[in-house]
Image (cartoon, rainbow, N blue to C red; front, top):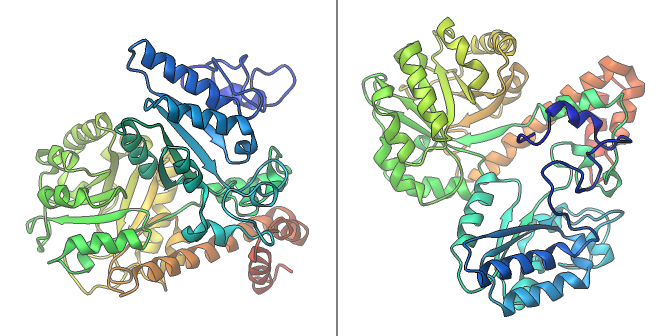
Amino acid sequence: VAGYFPESELETLRKFGSKLQGHPDLKCPGVEFCGGSLGTGLSYSVGVALAAKTDGKNHHVYTIMGDGETDEGQVWEAAMTAAKYKVDNLTAFLDRNFIQQDSYTEKIMPLDEKLEGDDISEMWKDASRWKTGDKWRSFGWNVIEIDGHRIEQIDAAITKANSTKGIPSIIIARTIKGKGVEHMEDNPQWHGKAPDSDVSPIINLELDSQFMIAPSIIAGDMTNLENEIKRCVSGRADYIHLDVMDGQFVPTKTFDHRKIHELRSLTVIPFDSHLMINEPVKHIRDYIEAGSDIITVHVEVCDESSFGEIHDLLKQNQVGIGLAINPDTELPRWSYKFIPTLDQLIVMSVVPGKSGQKYIEETHGKMIRLNTVLNEHKFSGCIEADGGVTLENISSCFVDGARSFVGGSAIIGKQDVRGAIRDFRNQVLKTKRKILLDKANELGGSTLVKKWIGLHVVGEKQEQIKKIAEEAGYL
């Protein structure tokens, strides 16, 4: 992995004789230092950063700490030292997930406030209860608080920390331990513990069922797209979908790369730029430079040569690579060679450029057929459903294989964007839970279904999943 050892060696993790122990170890290729006893890592990092400043070297030092680790007094001694010597070439990351080895941090040594009960989800959501950042500020640190599951926030925080002068920086990344596997989320029982083999296939399916919601801002006020971006931010969108129409490939004209460049400074949420334009190969660099994170072009205006040029340019600039097909278009054979490196395939379920359309029902069968082709060619990206996606049909789109969903009037057309996105997520979550129960029933009947439900011990998940199982006749 990363060139230090073959990927196949991951199979030896935590086995006797393996170089890959459960904790960082100097025998692991690529590991030159590890924190050893909890709490010593920051002290070491302060020393390295201070030495670099003393020697006039342009080094930047990063260190990662767990929130439970900060029970150790040595962490706070190091924090005082870093502030005293103004080691602004040091950035610490604090993984704030509220869980340490055998319990919740707030029940052992609270960093925010004492936890009543076992449901930490409400504390995670309520910023008024967060005190951890105040502690570090009082020690003279520059504090940046982020959602640790958002890559774009991590990237922006690192940039901000690196530009801060005169004081050290700490990025407090609030995370959910075990995120992506519901029964492991926020559950201290799964610290360093492997699941039973009979539920592993269900977990793998769950990990393959992550999804994103991408509001399309052209469904809002086209005279004030800046405000539509802000509504997407407050709504906690995963992506922001930007429909670029040139009035030629499609009858409607919206905006181009210049407007995207204007909007880019408003948020770090990824821009999902969908180019419905003629000859995209001539304009692709403009959209890269405007700040697009994913760029999708249509197969109808590309051939193997021009898309190959687009593909390589996007890859060189670390921009996501997307292809789109209209309702009456099948995926052309020339595109098959690119499938393994595509990040996204947009399947249009309305005719682009025309307003007021409903989801074309034939798209369901088309998406299922496409999934077969994509799997045969080792597709590792996601299918994006675009056009007429609503609360009523998003579940069917998810079952078809879509994992990213563009919401136009069903999201941006609503006054409460955050509520609309939440409703979309809850609807897909319910469908995902049903699919996982189907898998459990397929593998082990009611016995495995009951075992799967019983794993969900945190919060109200168990009762919610049990109800779905009862409705399906599995109990």
